[in-house]
Length: 103
View 1 (tube, helix red, strand yellow):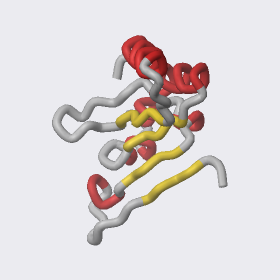
View 2 (cartoon, one colour):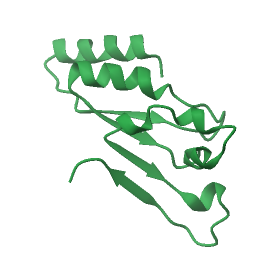
View 3 (cartoon, helix red, strand yellow):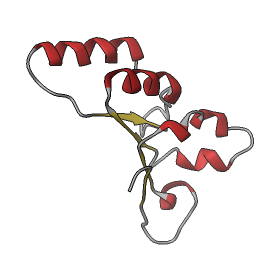
């Protein structure tokens, strides 16, 4: 996701009288394995007062890797995160984790 395009889209929908409430970033897209820049998106969300969620269902396991954990830099700035360990950890049963920063 391009942070500048996100910022423009937020302004556009606000001008149309709509009220955005969250941004869904991605860590490890299904087709390309792409990771959004969490820090840049967090900057936009903090400026605009929007909730930042990370779909880390596929790529969340990168946090356990010495070589690839930097792909999740800025994750401490998220409001919430979803992760599916069965997708990349080989968990034998489907399992999902939803982490939320605030109660």
